Length: 184
Image (cartoon, rainbow, N blue to C red; front, side, top):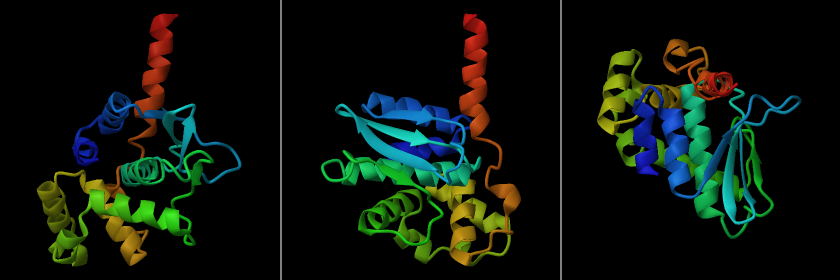
């Protein structure tokens, strides 16, 4: 999962993530927002194959990487327990059960290791530079760290230009549209 997070630094990281997961036998499916739901992601089995579904409802890099790692955590941690029934996640929900808590913790730690976070200047930074330096040290996309800060501080008006708004959906859907056109 460390390799997965490193891909976040690439411009086409989300699509590369899909390829990496496939090489490990996990299918990642991106769907436009499913109407009437606030679903971010899902993890379930189709036969013996773990499938991760992402709605890309919130078209932001920080949300994409957190949701992806959250669903990967379910696949790793809950393969024997919950995956048969499936997990259907709204990552912005505040009340969560034990398995959701475990998935959140693993996702969070893989993206930004807790020990490094606790003693990082980025945690209390008011300006982008220290946060971007910290992301570079971790070798993750800065949007991931900005997203964590916004959530932790409950400051969703902060750093709105740094979370990769509008950079995910088109990677999956424009590519699909282009492929269809070429095949026509």
